Amino acid sequence: MELGDVARKLDVLRAHCDSEGRDYDSIQKRACYVRPVLEDSDQFVRDTEQLGAWASPC
Image (tube, rainbow, N blue to C red; front, side, top):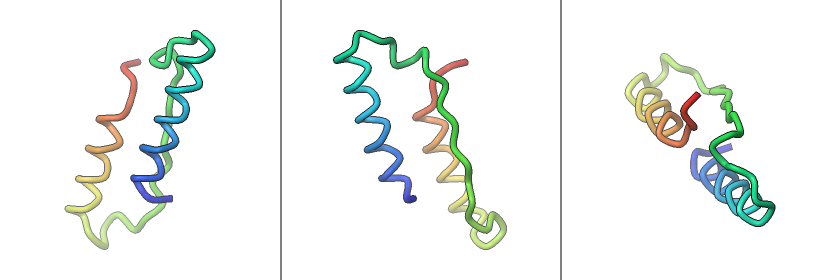
């Protein structure tokens, strides 16, 4: 799954929460990074920063 796919899925979740009256931020979201981290460490850092930007505060 690409990062853009994650963003779209989180948008869908947010829309479902809005329609059901649930607090989107109350849902804990997690991601599993399954790419070779050392292959492109700069990309890994960019990806994890983007995932972190989408995360809800715990």
